[in-house]
Length: 73
Image (cartoon, rainbow, N blue to C red; front, side, top):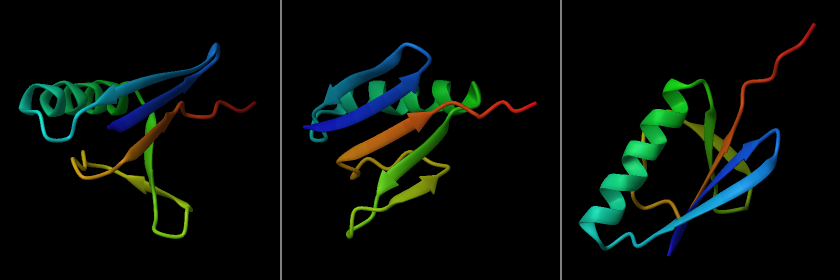
């Protein structure tokens, strides 16, 4: 099971999907597009565990983290 983790002002929500199921992949890809269109940054883990920003949906990623754009003053 792959996971999309969405961080926001309330904490985080986790969305699990089966990477081998077409319906699950389609839903995950729609969520990716929706969140990135709203300004969230998407990141996946590298082989050594670091986060790497991504701009396109990766159906092979085991974990994708979405975090909101930082707002400064």
